[in-house]
Picture 1 (tube, rainbow, N blue to C red):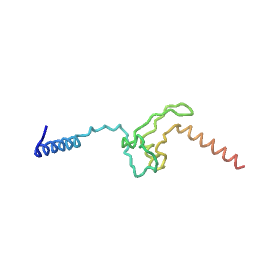
Picture 2: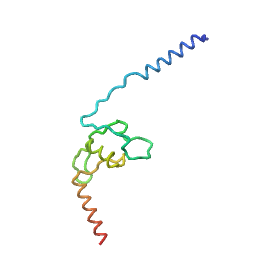
Picture 3: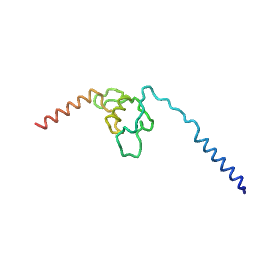
Picture 4: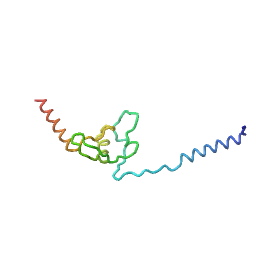
Length: 120
């Protein structure tokens, strides 16, 4: 069916208006969990990756439960601890907690002991 120039312009304007309305629709607001901390992208260590870690896509850190690799205890890596690890200590953005505090300290003592033995 043939359309006049006026009809074509009206159809184009209607499509544009529909696109504008679709772009300005309200984005559903996600409720952050209690204790969540905002991610500061400028403070993260540089990483050469094609994708972003989950906390970057979310925009905030949230408490993560994990099981200690050595003793099997259930632990929680808090949002505050994650923020310190990634932003202050400049930890690798794809690393996560795998050991509880007691096991980390025991591992450090064991490694320090083997280093001293090797030097003697």
